[in-house]
Length: 251
Image 1 (cartoon, rainbow, N blue to C red):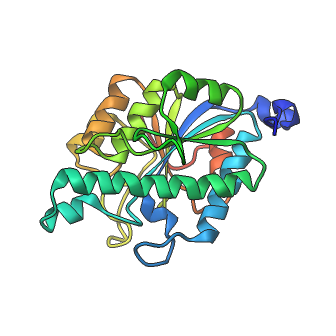
Image 2: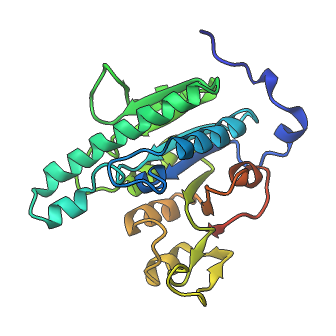
């Protein structure tokens, strides 16, 4: 099958695109919706795939990094006595499962997708090679980066910042269940204040749970902004890509 041509892109909308190459970061937890640990929510996957396919249809080049926390949480296992390195590798394998699931939902919507893994497993995913990944993006393929960084002790947040840097992404888009960054948990505190914009250093100094400090520092060093937004809100991703002020900008 030949790849979809960008000639089918909606002209007027494509001309208003704010970001041409993005890295979308999604936690594993967001994929399980209201289901229990170990599950994938087909409705959530369908919604995510529809939104991602929509922005790809505008000519946006999309890379994706998924967490694996819906299947296995390495830090929790390590805290329970498991060897940290083994626990982290198990978490990396969980991200591959999630990546293959999202690939299936994207391709059902006619979007050509490649899963590239930092852990060698040629039967299910391509090895991550930076130049090949960029070439896939240039051809209009959605690239899902699985297996984290391929190294223990690094989170998928750090993997997202690393891959964003490597593919020259213009922005890291962190899709969550909340509509931005708050000074405290808005679920527990009704008086929590939402930030429309905040600096990298303030995120680190205030201990805000946007991404881990390594990921924030890497984005800061490479001048890659982060936008935290509610992915469950239908069309938020498209609206953000078209320049609307959605969520919280970390820059």
